[in-house]
Length: 307
Image 1 (cartoon, rainbow, N blue to C red):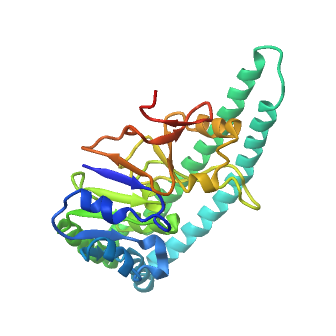
Image 2: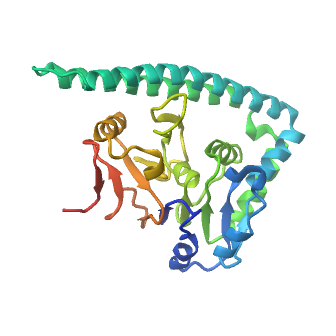
Image 3: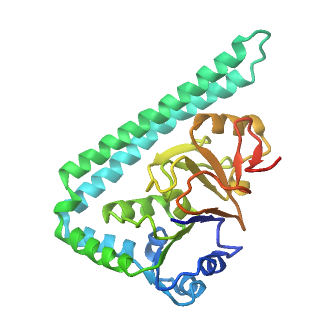
């Protein structure tokens, strides 16, 4: 199993060369449902794949399901509204907890209590993250109980088609776009990528391959300014948090701020995916390979294998 994470493809396009380096013989499945209504505008991406791209059309299929299965559509709408409400409460709690961390971090201490207080404040942030994740899991269980996707004939038909296409493909590419839409379509259609099938992904696609999808934007003009746990991904790369556009979206020079972010997720490597980045996990490996850049617990950008 080879998994390759790329930097954003808008300005520096590396997907074509990366896929060719794998020496694959056969069609390449394209998952670009994050593009939503632009999903069918895939000629450029297919061109980078030397015309071998096969679009799974997950967003189009989702629209078909919502039109034909009224019961599932109602449950999906309710889930979206409840998740939005949950995220609003999470944002309030998260921002308050982050503000407390920053206040503690900037308070000088003449004794050992300072570091202890800071760690306790960071732990409080982790508790808020855990609360959100648990509530989201409950929401998923609720919607599955209300409108089980396995009982929808329309969803089942699409799943069969998707599985048949994937069975005939030599690899998969997952593009960026709206990560919420991408994750929703992958989950509803239960898209299972065989472990031995190579995958190349970038931006939202890279995030979807991890077990912890985190949204971040230090330069957001309003709202929550801290990184937010959003959802669980496919789990192909456990222990990795993908950070596309890191240079544009993170204040990497503010090491105290970056340290707090890294310490929130001590079991994960916060992996930077900027323009031109290629991070290759060969033969089923999930540890960051040599040369990969990540945010260390000290808040500095580190490189795997660097002296």
